[in-house]
Structure formats: structure tokens, C-alpha cells
Image (cartoon, rainbow, N blue to C red; front, side, top):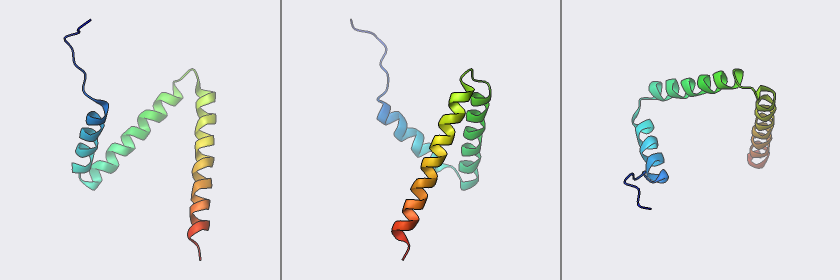
Length: 77
């Protein structure tokens, strides 16, 4: 079936989004990141899967801390 709608390639969309973000000033980049975090927090607060999302966030935080500890241990002299 030939559909007359063509969707853009995901890689192209991501590259365009990244280029737009890089073109922002540092203040605008920080504001954009902050707004993204606020949106994620809002979604987590209003989700019916709030407990599992909190657990996943805690696991990711532990993984982040482990990665930082490993990085510091690897580069400390």
C-alpha cells in the first residue's frame, strides 16, 4: 500500500534538533534543559506508575554515582 505521507528519517530529525539546541545561547540552553527536567518531574508526579518511576530514577542515580566513582578512580593518580 502506497501511503502519500512520508515521515522524516529519525536521524535527520535528531540532527536538526541538536543543531537548533547548539545554536542557542548558553543561557537559553540551560533554560531549555531546566524546562525539560520540570516537564519530566510533572509527568512523574501525575503518573499512575509513580512508585515504579521513582524506583527507576533512584536506580539511574545510583548508576550515575557508580560511573562517577569509577571515572574518578580511573583518573586519580
